[in-house]
Structures are given as C-alpha cells and as structure tokens.
Image 1 (cartoon, rainbow, N blue to C red):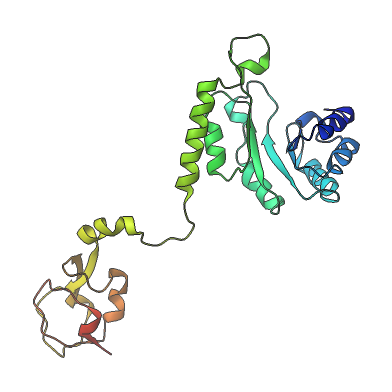
Image 2 (image 1 turned 60 degrees about the vertical axis):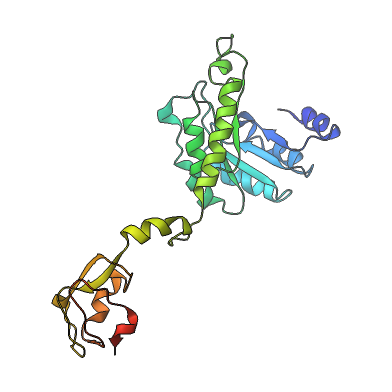
Length: 239
C-alpha cells in the first residue's frame, strides 16, 4: 500500500504484488511497482473505466504480467452493486490480460457466477469468525465456506467445457433412443419422385436422413420400394 512496502516485498521475493483499490489510481506508485517486473493483481474499486484505461497504459509500458479485478469497495457488498456485467466489459476493453473478480459480498454464489462469466482470478477475504469487530469480517468467508467455494469453482471450470456445439459421445445413448430420422409417410414405389407430403419425421430404426435435411429430398427419386414409416437413408436416394 506504499512504495516502502513494495521494496520490502520485492526483497522477500513475493510471487506477485496485489494493488488495493485505494491505490489503483496512484500512478507513481503503480509505475514503481510495475518496474519490479513481478506479476500484479489490481483491484478496480472506486475507479472509472477511464481511470482503468490509464492504469493499463501505465503498467503495460513496464510489465506485461498483470490482471484487473472487477471490484466494488463496500463491506459487506450489497448484491445489487456487485456489477458482474463489468467482467465481460473488462474483457472487451483489455483482451490481452486476464480479468478477475474481487468480492466482498456475503456467501459464495456471486463469486462462482464470476468464474462462469470468465473471471480467471478470484480474491475473497477469509476470517475465522465473521462476528469479530471490524467491517471486513462480515464480508469475509470462514474456512468451511472457502473450501466450498474452491470446490464449486472447480466444478464450474469443468462445466464450462467447449465452445464448439456438436453431438458428444455421452449423448449417443440418448440419441439411439430418441434421435429422429426422415421416414416414408406412406408406402413408396421405386423410382417415385419425392414430394414433401410423402415424408415425415419420426424415431426410427435404423437411423436415416437427419430431419434438418428433409427439404433436400424433395424432387429426388427413391431407388427402392418402401413401406410406410420405413427409414429413408442416403443410399436410397438418386439425384
């Protein structure tokens, strides 16, 4: 929280510097801290986005390894002032650095939601007893809550999964029972030209043409005789 502390912490080889919200717009202090070359975690409480842009430019000149934390400086923090929506806004403004969240609200749910929104760093205060004197204790987590938070975050991280939408192997069993195919609405004769009223979509065995391709069959010829409700496959279509 001051330049003397920066020197002391640098001497004892701390893994990173944490900049409290109250110091985030202290530009000379930020420059001195950034010049040490250690990773920096910077809270954004009581600051504007304009100020955070200035902070970004200041630090970036000296040190590429830093993160901004969305933070509202109130203890405990009312839920309506958490403003988790700023996490994606920070990500848009500063796409080349990780964005995190520093939470002072009660409980763990908001912090878990921050991770789901993309927070890569999470800061929470911890106390042994929330009833102790001082506003910070009421805004802190007790050890059991911290353990629950870490477990929940690891679950959310796993649940984030892939941004590619596709059928997954774990869905195969459900698809084999419920996946639908294009079938003959009525008996069809070999050589008939297909019209939409000859086709429908049902659960069928074996699986055939996917339902989203039904309109592509219109105007094409069927190469085999089919009973009503029989699956239509690629091999049965000509043209």
